[in-house]
Amino acid sequence: MKSRLLAPWLILLACLTAAVSPALAREGGDPGAPGRADLQRTAKDSTARYLQAKAEVDRLAAEVALIEQRLAGVEQQQGALRALATRGAVALYMHDSTVDWLSGFGDGGEEVLQSARRAKLTGGVNQLAGAAVRNLADSARQIEEDRRHLKDRRHEQDVALGKLNNERQFAAGRFSAFEAAERDQQRQAEADRRKAEADRRKLEADRRKAEAAGRKPVQRASRSDAPGLDRPATPAGFVCPLKGPFKWGDTWGAGRGHQGVDLLAPRGSENVAVVPGTFETRFWGGGGLTLFLMGDDGNTFVYMHLLRVVGEPRHVETGEVIGLTGASGNASAYHTHFEFHPRGEEAVDPYPLLVSHCPPMPRDH
Image (cartoon, rainbow, N blue to C red):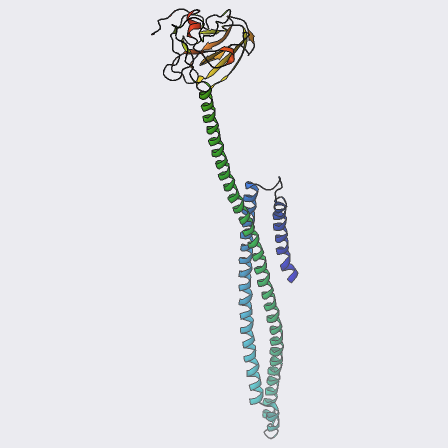
């Protein structure tokens, strides 16, 4: 009977161990360690098994209650048997058949018959008393066996339920620890993201500062100065950077360190190579989409705020279309910001160069 009681619990514990052990084996830094879904499923499964085992324990408790009721009934029967044996012993003592037999010789046949009947009745009482004694002994053995089984079953149910509860708490603890680690990782990732954003902004600010420092306005020579004083030579074969009608003026400086001239033209107006050379493009801060034309003569020309570039970076000839006018970057109207960098160095005012090659416009426009 004891082995039959242990078998279900052993099977249940074996199933629980088989479910939990693989998950534990995958932990410890293994790339195959269980994730949130696995740990959550394990916690739910262990809780379900605990509740199922608890229901079985409750069923055993009900069965134990029935056993205790039966034990109480046996004890009640035992008391009745003892009372019956006591009454039989009293009857034997109060109605001694030997005395009645001897006293019947002097009174004739009727008395003898009466004595015989009493003797027979007394013998039946003796047999009943003996049966009661045997029943008492059997009941005592049965009570002892039932009590032993009851004690074993209570111990088994307590041990099994305790183990299942430990497994349930362990699985729940693992899931809670995983959630805590997950929250830590999210906080760390957010901190890293913020730090990266701060670093990016600092680098951008440093880049703009360096760009501003490298593009300080250069005081151009007065147009009233004699020819040749501090004025770069006009590039050979230079043409106007825009085709079609456009408005422009002398906007060099313009109160904010403006290092070029703005050529206001309709959206999509064609920008052309002012000299033969090779160009490349990139986004340049507030200049938006910017094209750098490195002339074969060693000078560099810059076109900013473009809508788009025409074709791939390449070598081009004078007058070849290379971009379209737009308003990319920091621009409030469609225009091309044009710069001239002699020998690829700091920008100089391109107005003298443009005024001799582009359609005239009033200087105060």
